[in-house]
Length: 336
Image (cartoon, rainbow, N blue to C red):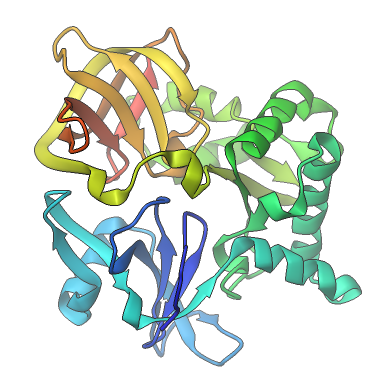
């Protein structure tokens, strides 16, 4: 069991029975960490850890939930405050917590013994630090490299911690993306492949989504590898605790609205403030999935599909609606 754990978005957890979970969000219940299963131990897995454990990667949220329901229901619980079934790891089942900042620090210490992917990850981190002046303590490496299961086809998954460092990095990338050596946009066939990876075939919105993806600066190519940068606020910047909100699931909704605030659109979770004529109490669009960051901007009319939730702030009694995007594969957010 890991004591005094403060795992937030970007961390990975290894359980005492060798399952690997990715931590979601910054706030968590008192007795567990909200985290989604990412790698399951299996004899026919195509990823092998340094300890010899074979793993299979799971990307579908539904597949993860189905597996846990059949094999390890202890990692599922119905959360009364959220009104639905959630994945998570009880604190007493956590064997190791993997910290993205520590991972990047270890790679720096490896020197010439690092792999080409590890070196490219370090080079991208160094480039961002040189351009912005942020500290090494604000940047980490997550994903398959963090858990030691990277392959030659793996990406560079960086995470920036803290609002100020995150905004510095995003601002520099918006201003200087074209001028940074070895940095490239998605384009051509690779853009097509990336759009399909993010959104599926989606023939109805294909052209729109392709255009949106081509303009995002928190993703692209560096040193021959694809990269994605996740921005995460620190716990003291969030301003609330897990138990401060009670949520009721109102079902799936497709709706058109107007974006009035995109200040939190670069973060995970990302938030878009909206106004909606047909649903006056709908205040925001929220997503914990990276594909919804940088998706739309203030002033745009948009269409979105997701899970409608009624939210009560238990501190003030205030009630409002939010649409959660990305829990289902066919959720979307597109500019009109």
